Image 1 (cartoon, rainbow, N blue to C red):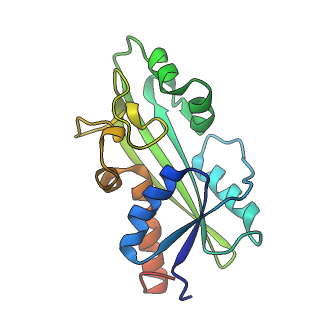
Image 2: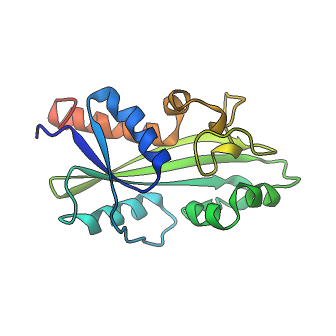
Length: 192
C-alpha cells in the first residue's frame, strides 16, 4: 500500500483537472495514462467502466481508474446516456439544443461511473446530479455538455462554474468521493 499516485485512464484534460481537484484534497496525486480502452456497448455506465477497467488489468500500473460519464435527458428517454461522448463529437451541444427546441420538460441528469482497479480487483462507484438543459449554451469552462447543463438549485451551467464550484456538486466528484470513502473504510488510511 503506500503509493499515493492514482493513474487515470483518459486523454481528456478536463477530466484530469476535475479528478485532481477532488483527489488532491486527500493526498493523492493523479497521473493521466493513455491506454486503449475496450468499449462495451451497454445502457449502464457502470458496466462500460467496469469492463474497460477489467480489460486493462496487468497492462497498466495500479491503482488506476477508468471513468465514464453520460448526460441522460428525460424527454429524450435518457438519450444520449452512455453514448454522450459520441453524440458530443457528432452533433455537439448545438444538436442537443436543436432536439430540445420547444420542450417543456428540460429535466436531465449527469451520471458518472468510476471503476477503480486495485490489487487486480475492480470496484465501481456511481455519482449523479439532477438538473435541466438550458435554452442556450452558456460559459466556457468545463468540457462536453457542461455549457447546457444547469444543476438543480443553481442558475449557472457547469461551464459557468469554477472547477472548485463544479467539484462540490458534480456527478464525477460524487463518484470519486464514494471511492475515497471506500479506500478510507477498507484500508483505514487516506491514501493507498
